[in-house]
Amino acid sequence: MPIKIAICDDMAEDIRLLSAALYNYDSSFEITTYTKGETLIDELLDSKLSADILFLDIYMPGIDGIKTAQRICRERKDIKIIFVSSSNEHYSQAYEVFAFNYILKPFDREKLYSVLDRAIEEIRREHSYKIRFSYKSTMYSVDCRHIFFIESRDKLILYHLSDGSTLQCYGKLDNLTKELPENFFIRCHQSFIVNTSYITEMGEAHFRIGQVVISISKKYMKNAKNQYYAYLFSHMGKG
Image 1 (cartoon, rainbow, N blue to C red):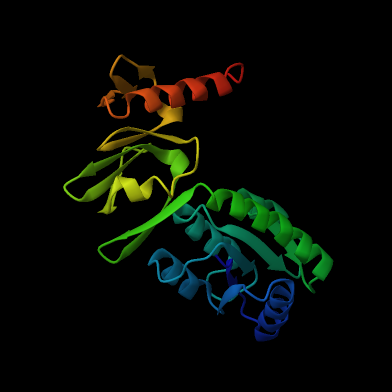
Image 2: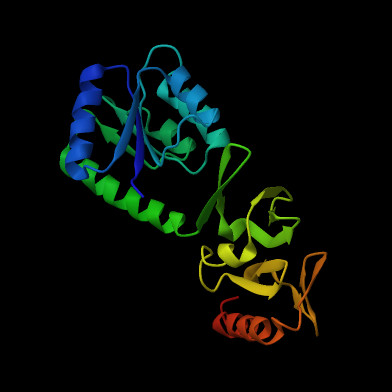
């Protein structure tokens, strides 16, 4: 899957130079450009734009780069924000909004590519934990590490998340198991898949996740328990 990049800068020449440098690094990048922070915010928060990396100019008319980043970070903590500026006086403010990095203009390609190497490595590592699905024209991207358990009910797949929310889509658990990261989840029932890291108790025929008790059916009993024992042994001594 190609890396998606957004650039927000009020200087057309700077956008052109940065875009050229990025395409030189990887011609498969999908790049979207903006000249106003307001437009970028609207499209990101309305899910009209998907981005892995955001190059954000600090000095812009209207909402500047710092305020733009503050708005985006409240809703989209997954985006790697890289500030670009002609001055280094905003370093401290940049890192208050957890910016991934800060690059000075004019661009030094060696510095830019070094930052990209690290950003892309982190993005690909994070992507390996994510599953994507749609429901009623809305696309979702969920980090598997935040899923308590997955339930199948009336042709729907329900994702019960660690923040207490539940997302859903149409599908079958048999197909979903092929998409989940190995060693993270255990199929314990025709209707349930549990996240091993959230299991607090294994009984004779159940797993407990917090206050929720999930049955282990006879069909899955041997494999489910063997998988959980393997998980426990692999984590012995790690806390």
